[in-house]
Length: 381
Image 1 (cartoon, rainbow, N blue to C red):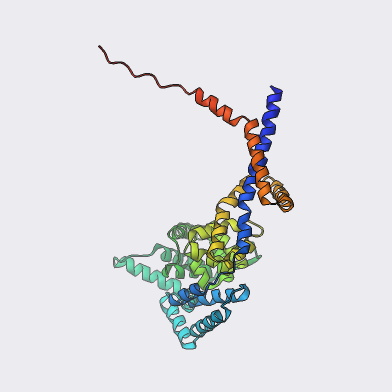
Image 2 (spheres, rainbow, N blue to C red):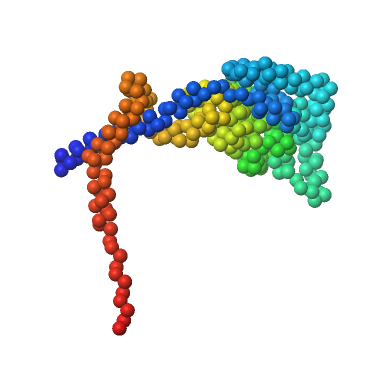
């Protein structure tokens, strides 16, 4: 009995080592392949953003590409970027858009968003929105519970409400964050699920006449996101944020890698936000995201695959620093003998483990012991 137990345990060790080696050999080439990819040409994406009127996002993407990408058409990107900048910064166009945003509280450009936020921050916007929603309700028109709820909370908190930011040790104005959220709602840049979170939080805050814990986290998250990514990129990201935890994650990532985060979310939507949540937990998550974004769609797909499968597997396998130690050992082995020999050795270990643990023998015994179906009853004579 003791001999059989030792044989089973040694086989289990071989099976784990062999399986782990095969998994490492299969996963690690993703990083190497990403490094071998050339830097992606984002000129087409820049043009698409320009065509959609998202000049701020187009200019920011062009600046990021020119800042560190190794591309062959740099002069063409520079020309497009300068053209977009000239259009975006024309004085009368900017003044008109900002004024329009201040008066009506709506818009799609950075200037319109800024004007709408300023009007809300001065309390005029909250009173205006409450009056508009009240009129709609009285006349039988459709009302917006998100705008009404945020406006009500804004009036209650007024400009004296500040929320401490634990990350920076400073205080954040709640009214500014609520103004941003109202503007994003009016321009269609908030997801349905996040709107539900806001409505619930507003109801509880109005009832208690103080901000709930979740609403305070939203205030801090919005401030961090807009400070890190800017209005245009933040609006694009918020369209796919579904909960407070996601907002906290994208806010953190925006401070370290604003444009790569925006690229990932523009390309993959909610899946991109989920990937950012995983990357925000890793020490080198921002660096990995920047490298993947430089490589374009192929690099982003690899980072999505890693965060969906590799990061979760690593998390479940983590026990102290055991994972880091085993990965470093695997790297050293690969460096010494090569990836193919390691894969062969790992496969042999896995086969030895299967034989010693007698997996197939146990499976056969189980199949033999399955009860057979009773014979069909014969017809009565």
